[in-house]
Length: 296
Image (cartoon, rainbow, N blue to C red; front, side, top):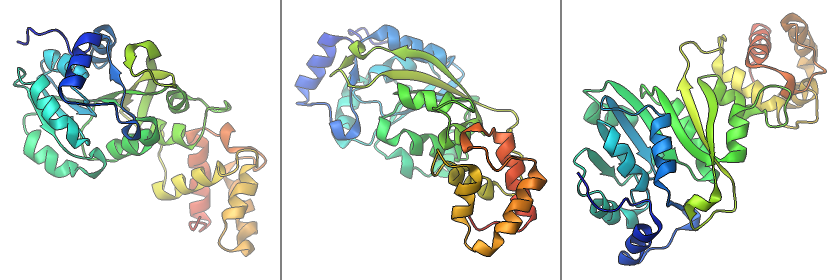
């Protein structure tokens, strides 16, 4: 296998950037990791082995891809930045188990991808270093896909990681916490110091492990309605769920029905959204559904 110095070292990273006349692209949130220990820990967090197929998002110059490929059965690396495709083809040339795809992960037809590439799948893990500005859309896109993802190991802004993991009645808890925890078990595996990046970012980073739940706590009559009322309940965090939902009603004459739905659910309308669990929102959503209040 590759006998060259690991990509994730200061000297090799500088050499690659100079060779291809590259600079980190701020608009894509690019920062290159220059510490192999961190990368090995990321791969370990996903329990990657020779039966594991990995989808990597944003391989950059291939530092993490290289470490994944050493342990995995196969790696599919999705890179949106066209400048980096020839770089990856060069830095990862010695690895026969890597497929580089010049695609925007948010536009990938996962059904077709699965049919074309995952016919002999035993275990699927997603590993990604996500720019903070697009973390949520990518995570939700993956959750809503048809892919049989066992777990995701994601590097992201520490602040976003804390929101994903947050529990009710904390300031970090919100619609994002619920949207993720409805489908995945969330834990922060470890934090990543700024010093392992080139250039060093202004934000703290963390590695989050998302594991697919065997059974979702979200058992409701209308999932779309659940998410509508959940988002509406957090529209103005300092307001009660009553005030937030009342504000969203398309017909103010339905306030009596809204009050009856609250009574039927057993949820106190004077509570704030941040105090409600997924199950609480589920009870409220089902009560609204039963009372015909579905147009939030």
